[in-house]
Length: 147
Image (cartoon, rainbow, N blue to C red; front, side):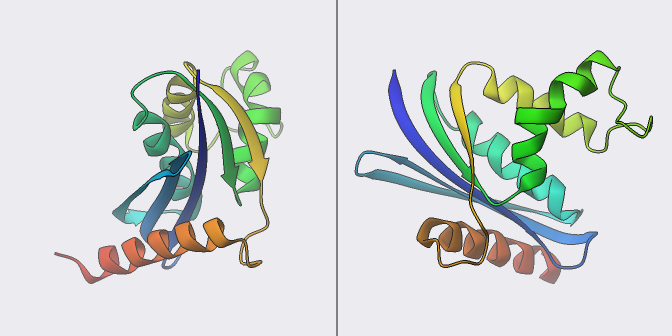
């Protein structure tokens, strides 16, 4: 199984507001950057979209070390998701889980891979995190300017 390192980030100019996401995929010396935007979204949706699009970009099952500065994404996939599924997609406050549509997409995108989820502190000089933060921020700025 191929080993891939993925770094992701999301950004939003206002929350909600125009948003962007960025991802860096690395296999050995090969790297690929991905980015995208949404004119009206939230930061958490962009964080999730970055991970989903990065996983979807892989054409075969891989062993992945996925780095994100989003506790929402990391904790969601490693701690909360199974409880949400068992309880019919309601959270501990008995309210509907936010972003359920993207959680379903993320589960599907992650299913064929073996993923180790790694939280990194954002805006702390982590080279790859700063790189994907810039991709996400630039995409959010472009979304805010419109077509």
